[in-house]
Image 1 (cartoon, rainbow, N blue to C red):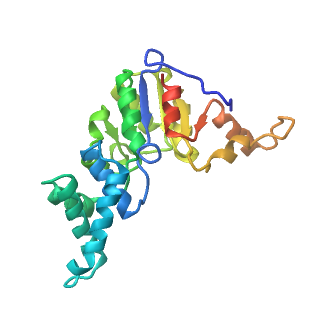
Image 2: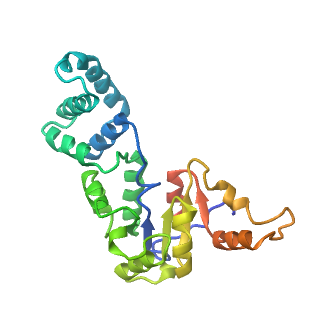
Image 3: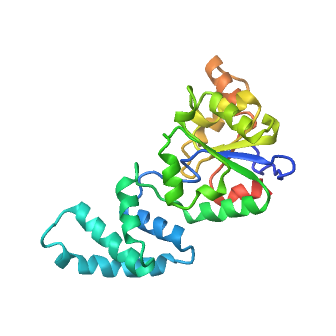
Length: 255
């Protein structure tokens, strides 16, 4: 893989599909990160410093409020209620309902909103292709992400979800696009490469923790000779795939 990213434009590659996990959502955050994510979606001017200051005050005041119901779940509800009443007045009931109904506790990185806003302003057309169930639409709605995307495809929309090419083919159909006009941004080789490449789409892997890094060195000896059929297939599937580690690098690729 080249150390320099090959850039494209909305005129050359106008369509981008994203996996839900990875660049857009982070799995299993702490309670504190969930709260900040929810409040930041309601108020993008909220800073972490301001949030931490209010949160610390609420944790300090919590023991007295827990005397009758000293459970962790009740504590979280009380803290959410107090945080939202102070930082997003009038929204506590919705916030508590969102937290209780969230299928997985997720966090939306601040960079997600920034990247999506810039891509939209650059005239890219965006969609989500995910192996999550239909409840993912509700998660995106709660976190103010729906408006960035033309549509969201989940495992409930197709008989064969990722890594099958079927869900990507449906995305192209919904876009009214040719495969060469589209790129997919995922976070796992196992789910996000074989399907789109089979159709001729471009592929990018967001790998902030380096989980996929070793794949890009597999399949060849120092001489460059392929050493096994399995490694040959891996190397072939990785050909042309761009791996990046920083969310901001998306904006270096999609100019």
